[in-house]
Length: 544
Image (tube, rainbow, N blue to C red; front, side):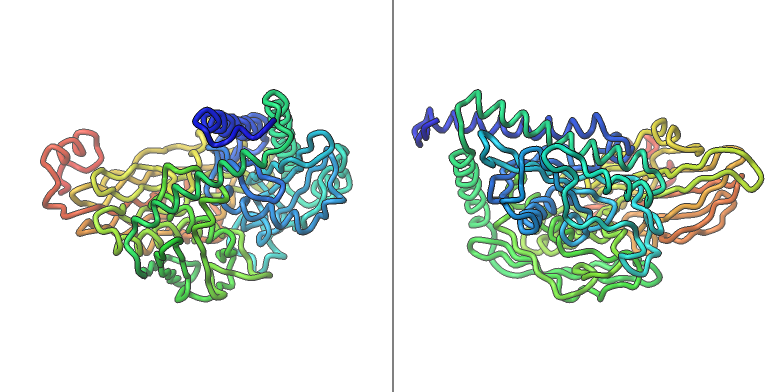
């Protein structure tokens, strides 16, 4: 197909093709959702999918997916291209890794990349990422002292060559994980995801008459660059800093960031953040960068498509610390501080753009990994169960915060029915937590209360991955902080917010998730808003 040029008809055709490309990656992601074995993927959408040009630049991403996966994947594809020479790439290939520093930050995320060929020439790469239920080792938790304890490590290698699956890798996987059928099933689902993307792209190119994506890529990147530059030019110029104290593992951890707006880009520097931890709460820079860019994108240009050109306007740097952990640091729970990065960055930005930034929220997902088993001497079922749960978002400058919402990760909460189906556990209660949102002219979003027990004749260990228990989300512009989280048994026994712990048969684990901070002076909240809160049970009759 010849270049349609820059006339209006040509631009319309390019825009149509851009939309077609987005529909291709959406179908790619939906294939993974439909075929995945793990509930974290199938029910919660803990995944990403995207298409890249032959130089490894992201052209488009699926709307389905998390910022941590999408934005790390945008960098990870280049690592695959550096490891596998072009003359060793063939039609039908699929490459894989879970390397935390070349993938998406921890071993539980599997990233697959597949070249897409048309008429014998590579025209694109498809990539996808998903969180699998188990990778062996100590299990999903903070207790490992190095990455070597956290599970099987898969360097960048071929999962399939010319369409033939590497069965030796499959056998090694089966021997190293607790849920081999789920994990291997997810590997095949990821490969199928890329294959569907490839087929739809080739169909599209043949239909339109394209032999390469060069012209379309130039159109996408040039329009994106122009739009991004316009937004950045409108921002105030200067540098602003912020600090945020989190629970850590056995002692608080300080996160620090300086945001600098230049004439043509925005910089984030994590200098001042606490050193690496000996526990598995460290975060590789690839993941910290992903969420820093997400926060900036939300603030600067939320309506501009996310691709290589938009991400190029953001630079992230850091000395070695807990947000730039280096091998062999344990990184299993890298999501906790990664999910705190947006509040950290937006807190700095609030000094540049007063009155426009939401209050702090729960931030990190309250993930819980449950290892259930029969009590000694009883028969029953063993299972590994993973749940994603969300606290409240911070209040916004003109609206209350959203309750029990996964910001910034964007994953769905797993349905109770799907969770109970995966193992011998019962979710006795899952409801909004009254009075947990910080007071203000606009109220913080509510957390939730979740009550979990093993079925009769069973007990379970659980890996706690919680934060904001000792350091609740702060309000903004006079708003009050959200209420801190609580982890306890039904007999009142306090449990730790991180680490593997035991819940005996007959006991229930109670999680009270933090609420978001409030925004603005509480004295300015309208009587009607307070009455509405009371009528819906968001606050108690005698509260406020």
